[in-house]
Amino acid sequence: MPAIALFVVVNLLNPSGYRGAGGDDWYYLEAARCLAEGGACLPTTHWETRWPVTAPLGWSLALFGESRLSVSLVPLLYSLTALGLFAVLMVRQFGRAAAGIGLFCLIATPALAQSFLRPNPGLPELCFALASLLAIQGAARAGNDRWMMVLLSLAGASLAIAIACRATSIVLLPPAALLVIIVAGFSTRAMMAFVGGILAPLLLQSCFYLLATGDPLFNWRLALGHTRIASTELLPGTDTSRSPLFNPDFIDGWRPASGIEVHWTLDPLLNLLAHPHVALALVLPVIFALIWKAQAGRFHPLTPVVAGLFLFGAYYFAALAYGLAVDPKPRMFFPVAAAGAAIMGAVGSASWRSRGKLPLLGAMALFGANALLISAQYLDIRPLEREARHWAAQGRNSLATDEMTWRILTLEPAVHALTHTDADRAARLIAVFEGQCDAQSGRLPNGRWHVTRETVHRSSPAMQLGDLVPAGRRPLVLCLFERVST
Image 1 (tube, helix red, strand yellow):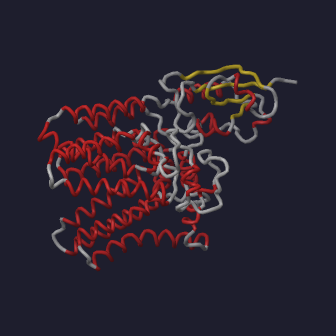
Image 2: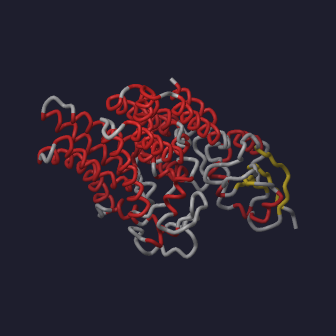
Image 3: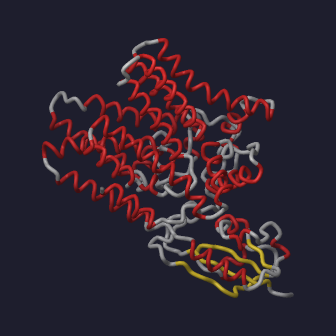
């Protein structure tokens, strides 16, 4: 199956998973380490409140030890589960052909593909959101009321766990409630079962925080306060003391992901539509749907479903980008990408059967080529880890590293053991930089330094490292510095 082959290839091209540095995966790893060592840790940041991300990762570390494999295992399982749920939903709603096309397009969306092995909240969030949708779909086909109530309760519980993955998933509640009404009508029992399913996990979570801190809304306060954490993505001068909700200053304050600046009302949409990590999943389904609708005539059984998927995507984007004023990066919009892939599958399979195969084949080739090209741009940092291990083995005396390098190479035990908080006293220092080592010596702790060794990694066409290095052509280098005696 092409979708399975593509999944394997994009992970072979981007096998590192965890990248650390300033990325969110560093905070999830630190929270998981705490859980693996102590069993339960009170969160201090909004990252640490996301227990569906951190708890399984902590269990993986406790069971298998800390390694790149054990850190990648949980994201991989979430990825496979989310993709499997998407395929089942598509088969049941549109048929096997549509499922194959939609699954291929979803896997080929780089925003998702780069997260398959990397700790992140987006795929767990999508996983539980799809599980909720599958339960609602099952309730629509339930043979009796009792089974329908059970499935609606499960739908609510799954949605609550999606909210625990990322609080922004709260915007899924209105469309989910609307689906319940469509399935069960204005049934009080059905809505109570759904709402009860939502409340049960959230109340258990609140009870935990009440016992631990005395504040049942502790996690929500952390989530709402995350905008006060210093971020290089917010432009200088943005007032972070105010709530981001419906705040034009916040909407206008985020650095544009694609470099487009027109007006704050348009910038989030234009930058997302232009971003290569998600653009095809947003633009091509709309184009295909409009062409298909023009050819299909005034009414077709697919029309209401496709229109509903489009409206959901528009609503979800507007709610996050303008209502919650989140940083409108592609990683925030996995449900929108899934809706686009579903449209692509439904319309593509209908077009395949009736009017020809060439446009669809061309679109899928474009999806695949984009995914492979961008996946190949992520740097495999494992060679840097091996080189750092070799350097550390040659002598640990007075050897240290800096904070960012320690975060990037932290899964290499030899680097993890180095001091990174007291480098002022070190005689030698290992550091990862972009560009050339000589040009970076001024960024090191107090004193004069000279380069004794360096390793340049040139295996990637674009020489990127996720959130650490912006798009460019300069490689990452591993540098060994020695302090100059005075």
